[in-house]
Image (spheres, rainbow over the protein chains, first blue to last red):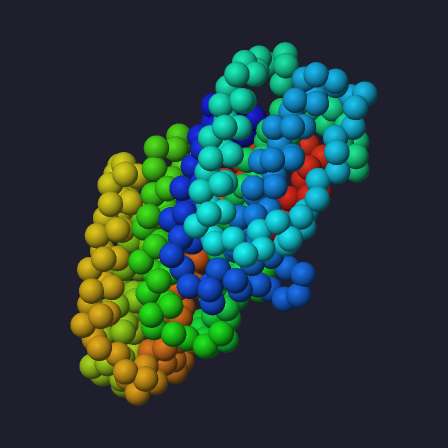
Length: 174
Length: 174
């Protein structure tokens, strides 16, 4: 499937409500569960998505539109949220993510992106030349990937509890 | 983490709203997308979860409580929904799943499961002897696994669109 702006927004605008439905009110044994040291809990993932709204997707789209390839993106700090989320209730993080996402989709709308603008190029500090279309596609998949991570982390808390069913539940070995 | 009935219900009761937030109103290019022939689309997954409510989890819990090991479970038809869901709008499937889940959690509550009852055993047609605790754990992980499947299937529609970002998006190679 080719990139389509309207279809991308369909997904991006749903992520805050999806995370809220999945996580809000869940106990800490799910929300704070991880896959081991240095891995993300569902709580950490929400903080990481907030960081993405603040420093990654729309800021990089702006760099592409304003400066093109000549100004590389700032490197994205994948673990900034370990510090920034500390002590905050999950409810607050979910609300912050929702608010930032609404604002960023508003900004995206105001960019009036045409097919020509979507071919504009920028420089990723590690990946090299990328297009605005690729950046926005990656934003969509990044959301979906982290929803997938959350349900995987939660699943693994019951890896032993399912007993023989482990053979039928491939998420437990991902 | 050990099985805990209240914690399991926390997850099970959220799945209908999670699926609704993720999928309701999405266009067919996402909802009907698959990973290739004979694989499930998000639409198919919702139908499969409905089948689970109707014929798998609670019916099997009843068999364990009433007949124990002596009566093997009916085999679960993993693809029944390809026919049963045909022609139905996704909105209807989501509503059906929600209703059945509410009813089944009500039934679960009425079973008044004690730690002793949770150790009761049944016979899975392929996996052999399983406990009620394992069955209920598998119900939770089955939900989470299928949410993970939905976001993976959706992600893969943008595998090419993300360009060089594919290297940073592991959900695209799962």
